Amino acid sequence: MLLRKLIYFVLFIFFIWLAFATRIHHQWFYPFVTKYGGDTIWAGMFLFFLRIFFGKISLWKLALINYVLGVADETSQLYHAPWIDSIRDTALGGAMLGHGFLWSDIVCYAVGTLLAFIAILVIEKWIA
Image (cartoon, rainbow, N blue to C red; front, side, top):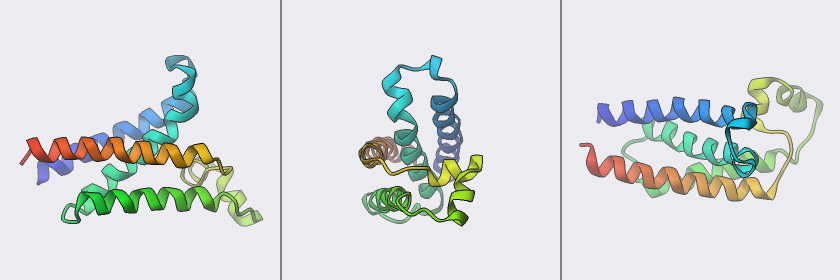
């Protein structure tokens, strides 16, 4: 169990770096990846983060929670008030809350959650 948590933590940290890399280092990636990769990776990263702390919850439920949280975060971007927009204008706030609603992000969250779900299935099958 501890080895799994360590693997999820390493994947969590790596995916944070990779998501930011798609935003900062456009020259490293295909344009499709720079456009959609960050949100897809971010959703997968968050599922690894949740799995560190909620290892006893069934994976499909945790994946559903992850996706719902992503959709909630995306729809919160429809709300604009000075206080929340000032948070979004910071680097961390912008990364966590985003700036504007996009339907494509909803799809990216689904794809990222599904890919991380599959990765976790493989990890949990092969690592005791």
